[in-house]
Amino acid sequence: PAEHHGTVPQRLTEAGAVIVGKSNLPEFATEGYTENLVFGTTGNPWRREYSPGGSSGGSAAALASGMVPIATATDGGGSIRIPAAFCGLVGLKPTHGVIGRWPTPDWIDMSTEGPFAPSADDLALLWRVMAGRVDGDPASLPQVHVDQLAQAQIVTDGSVGPKVSLSGGEVEIGADLGPRRGRNAISHHSANHTHLGVRHSFSIAHAAQTARNQVRFADE
Image (cartoon, rainbow, N blue to C red; front, side, top):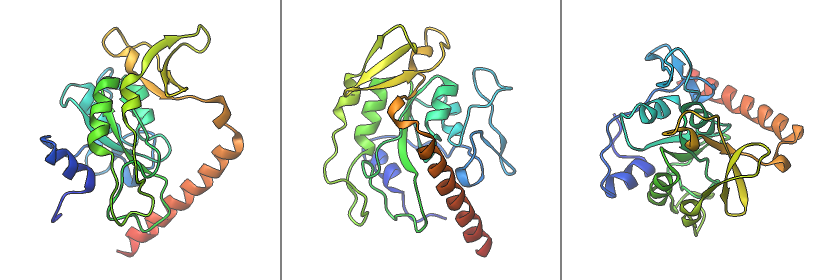
């Protein structure tokens, strides 16, 4: 059994949060759906025969179903952003170092911890608690600015659809899921960052990380 909390659960506990459990995810957290041989398949609360996405689909499903008011997750290649879009939530993959980690991973790692919430205001509140430097993490940023997220406002330009203006950039809102949730399904959107070379590089690195994890756990 674990002898102490990780960085994020510790910060949340110190801030007064009550941790109710661990959510479901696919093995090695490398799939865009949520299913494993131990706990089975997680359904989407909006339509249970559909997937909540992955890999952090368990957190998204718990939040979208009303089981919890906020949730945490990790994201390397969409593991927060995909479930947020599928379940009508606000999800964010922070820049590396915004949320310090300890212990740091001993393998190639593109994943960061991040927040889930039903609204941008709730997400900003959770992010403020999660963010911060950790001594011993070489990627940990010395200063973090998290207040811009709470200033996000919904705008529409008539092209792609509704967007959220955030610190000079844009965040694309997902499909309308109704008046209660539809405005909250967001994922990053920028035409300048969708080059094929970037996607191919990520695919290679992601495959290498997955293979490394499988060998590591097989040896144990």
